[in-house]
Image 1: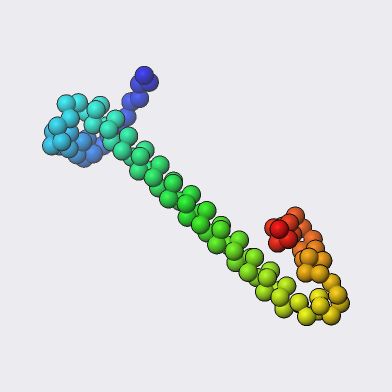
Image 2 (image 1 turned 30 degrees about the horizontal axis):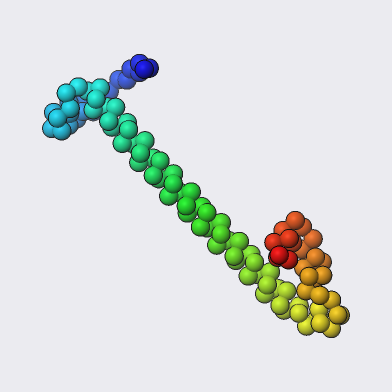
Length: 105
């Protein structure tokens, strides 16, 4: 086990002592360890929520991009038919990047 020393201001030290007695902790060390564990759980939970929101927003933005591509390609569909090009050829022409694979699949 590692040893960690901390200094607390008088007001915070008094709050720790009061809460420790109120909630039945026998030592300040037990109270502080428990408080740290609870804070780490809280931070972990916040991280999971943030990651979930990030994934959701990323998926939403991808869907928006795909919708814009489809709208753009659909608006050019008459040109495609007139020139006898396939939609696949138009995608290759309009989006010559690695992201083209997403649209063509």
